[in-house]
Image (tube, rainbow, N blue to C red; front, side, top):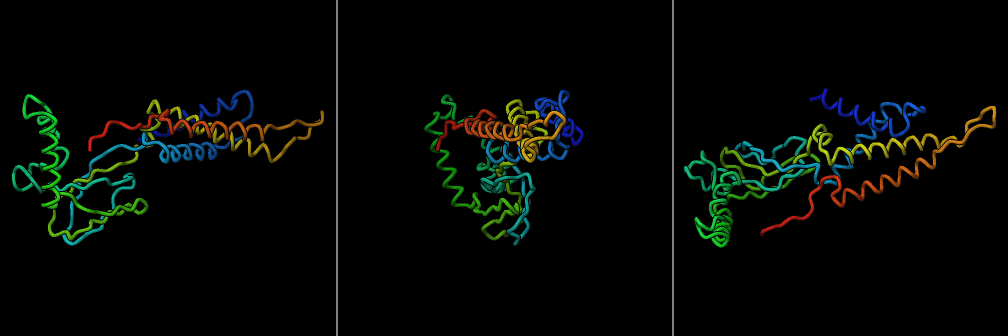
Length: 253
């Protein structure tokens, strides 16, 4: 995995160097500058695009009288917690629960088929029933989530050991983003723009270089202005889902 990620990074760096004129002129950037620009691009993409996260489900074994749990760093947000021992078909939770999403998948498909149980009206009544029973028997657990410390606090006393099912959003790995055909080009172009800005910043420190023919002028300020315009455009593109983010879809509820 690490070797694959390094190969992907080198591909981005070669693209940036070529676009800056590498091979024809000297590009005064060190490997550190390329790494910094790519890290900035990845972080900006994660801040601005929902294409940088994916939905996942995590099983959390509880401990009696323990309310705080530390989750992996890649988890961005915890949306819901399901108790797998409530509403079980087997009575003991071994077969899942009627109130967690995996066990509901077949039930929902069956109820939505009008030839089986009456279609959408029946599905809506069953969904209301699920919510009512879940609230009455503690299927849904209240909690607090700290995005900085990754600490999940369950807001009720844990009286027995059981496996909770967490509905989460987690970061997509760098290697996956650099393979995504929509995200990849945005990240490469943002890395290029940041490298161009750093190059312009360095060149603007010296307006001219002395020489036998009176010296030559550097294009630092022009590079910075060009790079800033590209950065602004790329950040605007994220808002219009050019980089693969999801727009608003159809929602029931």
